[in-house]
Length: 632
Image 1 (tube, rainbow, N blue to C red):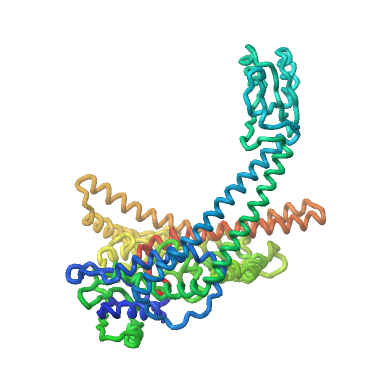
Image 2 (image 1 turned 180 degrees about the vertical axis):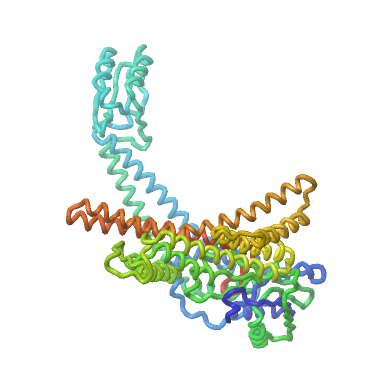
């Protein structure tokens, strides 16, 4: 049990030989258990060249695609499906017939869907025309006349800035043109410009451009007076609405008539899915089929018993532990209780642990919560976060424990700091107020960082030993030699501050560094001076990496001090206000601290976890365990 908390479950390679007619039942048995990770292997392709499930998978995918398109007709009914009943085998003949039926249904429904889209597009176009018609609402004229070019009349319709309207009238009046404003919106005037069609037409257009005139096109659909056009558009919109309701009624009627058949189709596809998803790994020849994959070691006996119940014919189930060369192929099956699942999600965001590698979820959860509490310690803020997590549990779902744990940690450290919503006079601190001894806070953060890095390096050594990377585990800068260098450097720094630095301390750093450089020299493929430069830079990076990583943890103390300092700033501003303003400032200031600084602290803790912890011992390039389940 303890082992399962810190590393993926032990897996075994599964070889299952069944009669071809039993392949579907074997897939159902394994999917119902949800413990088998199918995986193809190229070792049997020549000996077993046939793929018994290829045709089945092709038909299933087409049927599932058609069903997904039809399924929306039932609205939210999928959430209220009746019990499925016991799984059963779905023969290829039944699947083909179901696919053809779904095809006929979709052909019928797609015509209704296409009609709906056409009507929606037309309604959108009519609404746009109505919006355009507003610009011409005050023109009592047949709009089609404004669209025609006339031999003896030059006509323009558009907008001009109000500031230029008077000057434009005066200028065009000299050419016997009339400028009539029929609508004013903001700083624009909608105008009609009318004049004789003569030699001055080009000059008039120049004057219009100089005045900032912008032509307004009249849609070709406007073939009557604005009032009449408006009535025609309203009538057509009403007709479209009625037609949409009619089509919607047809779709609902179809869904109601075929509801039971669609539910039966859903069940059949659910039962057919295991064989369809298993088919890429299914090899066969003649009447024999072979299934390959991985399964948790402690569930193999259970799988054997299930296969014995499901299969009609004899079968052979072989299991073995992974070979050393197969470790990279083994999927990582992780088990986490509800409280750890949000932390597992954040770990997965970084990567999947390799098989045999330490699962950092529990360590991540403990250290994340501890650092968040130390950096954001306040009783009031912590209780607010915890209460908010509980009240929003419906939206947070699996992340509810994460938020509530952060709130509890903040509350506990708030008791240690004696702070409640920034007030430090109400509660006596169980430890110290951060600003009372900043150096102590920095030292605690430094020691925390040292411990964090030591544990991370030890986990790196352990992972490399498990993967039989002996040289890297013992002599690399992130291995045992690197740990010795780090501890030697810490002891040397302590001795130097006490004035006791001597030969022992120098050797404690020199020997591990020499081992690291020698290992890097032997491993490097460079030559001559380039090799010397590369090895020297790698050694320098190792030393500076330990120093930089350690100092990064000082931000744990820095943010705990910053939290108090922000509260002090809020109270300083509040004291400048009157009685009402005082409490408004206190409330808004605490809200600012809670939201903004709380988010920043969470990001900083996550950064420390990812870049100072995970990057040391966690490769994150493992293969996720994806078991075969009903419906997938």
